[in-house]
Image (cartoon, rainbow, N blue to C red):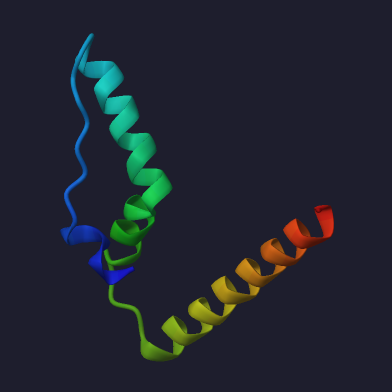
Length: 71
């Protein structure tokens, strides 16, 4: 996820700037860029970082397990 901030994200402006901004925000949200920027706003201790990563992994595993059960 560290490479998210360096990758360009393009949106074509056709009708209005407002629509383009909305599409850009949706793309950024989907890519996780907004979360990454918010998270990097302050220093995160290594112990807190480890706990967060473990919590995110647990959440991901639960979500994948639910998807497998639904099939």
